[in-house]
Amino acid sequence: MFEAGERELAGLGFTRAALARMRDVDWNAVHRERELLGRTGAVLVPIGTSHYPARLGVISSPPPVLYCRGDPEVLDRAQIAVVGARAATRGGRERARALAGELAACGLVVTSGLARGIDAAAHRGALDAGGRSVAVVATGLDRIYPRSNAELARELGEAGAVVTERATGTPPLPANFPRRNRLISGLSLGVLVVEASLRSGSLITARLAADEGREVFAVPGSVDNPLSRGCHALIRDGAKLVESVEDVLDEIVYPGGLAAPRAVRPPEAVDDSGRTAGYPGALEQGVLDAVGHDPVTLDQLVDSTRTPASRLAAVLLALEIDGWIEALPGSRYVRTSARR
Image 1 (cartoon, rainbow, N blue to C red):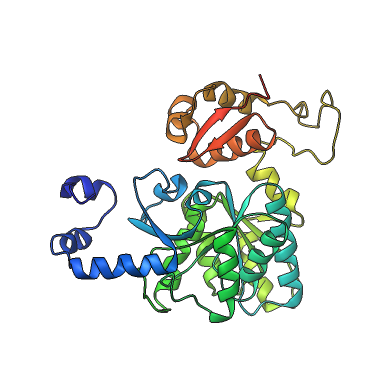
Image 2: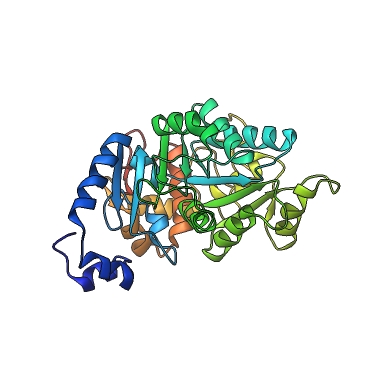
């Protein structure tokens, strides 16, 4: 990267201001940053490298570099963001924890912002289910906020990842939290909101997701609960109403109306959509034919199948869950030997 020209770096998403700073690098500060990264156990994930998440790279303003503590490969796996109010009700926290646990049990990574309330409940639900979870923070990795979630952040670093675009040492500045939300939505196939006021960061995250063509889901609540108003507003604007995890899976894992299997059935059984259980439908078959037995990248599949990346990722997840393909590091996929 240090040998690259300005035009090449601009093509990777660096702004003019960033390029200007690169021309006058404070190498002493660079060495201090490397030392701090080593202390936190973090790695850098620059845009354009194999570990940089493909879905994040296509948003309107992707961060040029991510700081990641944990497994950077998890950033490119299929994710659902679960977000909501910090001052959530007990019922809201329990609902978020349960939904996140079921999503994680289905193989989806649960992404959130490590805040109190719904965010923390979602992370905890995914971990308790033995799944993976990603926390996107607005501070440096050495300045976890709130401090009451420091232990949760440590667990996420071991069973997922904690990620930020902010350099080590960055404190919890109010202006950085709304901008952080574009990373939560950008990493995810969709955003599920559980309890939110009409003026909240969760609604910002949901609207950013809609702007990027991602799915938006909302859990309804009592009309007497002020924290239901944000979710009800999203539903009125077209978000999918969520009563159970199947409402999310039908849109994310089985797109185009393909129904998710509700119970174990014989391989020859056929569901209501006409899809034979355990066998690909028409859309999935087209993607499966394009994968083959040699590793192929997500970008190559987008070109060969003429399928948008967000929808293609959902189809690939369905094929992976059913055992037809295997996901490899660097957004690559290959047919499994167990299926022919």
